[in-house]
Length: 189
Ligand SMILES: *[C@@H]1O[C@H](CO)[C@@H](O)[C@H](O)[C@H]1NC(C)=O
Image (cartoon, rainbow, N blue to C red; front, side, top):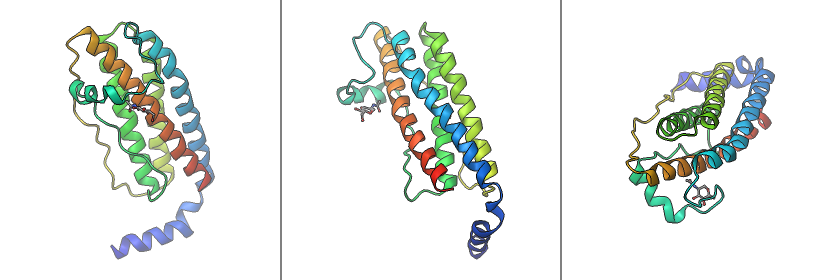
């Protein structure tokens, strides 16, 4: 415990100050990637969710029960206050990996692969970028990257459409939080 405290103080004053501008730069390019993901979501939604009349911006409250029925795991909660850099980055990585896997499952079930493949590629790049940031910050990582095991229950066409709709909406919501977190990281370094 004492050791970690000393390490943390040391880190604040000396060791970690060197690559801080690099961290800001890495955070900025992660932010561009996150914005790219966000801007790709509407096209993917339009291509995948075709016969339900559901819009991306529509309220999902009445559909929330389907999240658990289809088995879509909730993403990690992100907030800028009270989170260490390690916590923020680990949660960003976990949430990004979760959505990459969600979209992969949906891509296997629905015929809108192109738009989803592009999103998946951008998500993987974003995950790599966040891992690099963690390396640059030189923090001993205590958080683990754990993506929950799941398999979606999509046994009807309706459920496939709903899985795509809810996952893309959840991805949009999560990515907005990621952008806020990254902005906070850039500003506080
Ligand atoms: C996404 O956020 C909107 C607005 O806060 C909310 O209405 C909707 O239920 C959320 N959707 C999911 C799937 O989390």
